[in-house]
Length: 382
Image 1: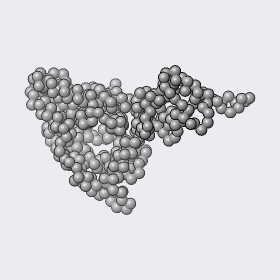
Image 2: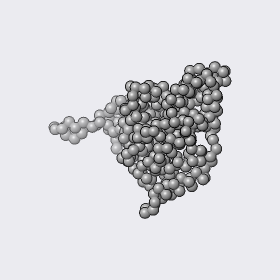
Image 3: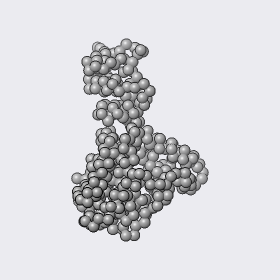
Image 4: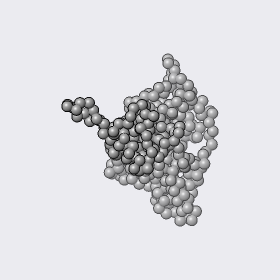
């Protein structure tokens, strides 16, 4: 039972919910408003002043939809953050503090994983040596085989590369990556090693050349990679979003750790942008499967058309390749995986937006052609 009788505002919410077939009690409302991370906002309070004095709470009838949703979706022992994410994704007015906590959790979990993998940060020792040694230890304990998703993408790459009738697309892609002839991608072991360093200590620990080689590690040898070209020739633009130390810090990881960048996005991105990224993340698995299946079908029929041409022209943009792998390897993502992807989308889009702000019309046009549709909604391409 609730500790006190329900207020007139609560009784109004309960009655309105009942009219929609939802059984809600005062105790339910009390639980959903409890801290930390309340699921239900408090009632608006008015202060009429004298002669009435005191304050009066009034029911915001727009909250009825949220109350009904919570009543229909409550489960014994359900994760409160997951419930908040689902309600938020449905466009319901979940309190902002709860939304941000839910989006921050994957970054907090990443920081915990890094602390376990690398061990405690040295107090007086060499920080860089600790990061590099920890990355080497992690790589030594991991499998280094290609995943099924990687094998599928590379099989498509090889077929597309072998087709002379796609020369126009390849010429377009190659012009975006004039350094391809001298390119040297990282092998899988080195790629994992440098990825671990970048996640733990931030991209500032890597030279532009190493970052570019890491980007090339996503694709088949000899494939144009616009992102790699940008990283090598002008790393200030694509990495500008990561150049400043994040405003929010998690314990036990270096200040520029990617975990801190993701955590800062969760704490500071406009709520509307979090919602847009959440919706975009939902599109990725279907987009990845549909894209690959369409290219495979065209190649199998020996009739490469629009989708295959698009693959040749720009599917090797770093963002596209990353999310192809994400979508194929996580066809039915958990809420945690989807949340992490949403925050990564914002971080990546912010980096591209900085570049787009100073690029020319040709650069914006190329982005419109190359970026996957779910990312376009987060970009400023004019």
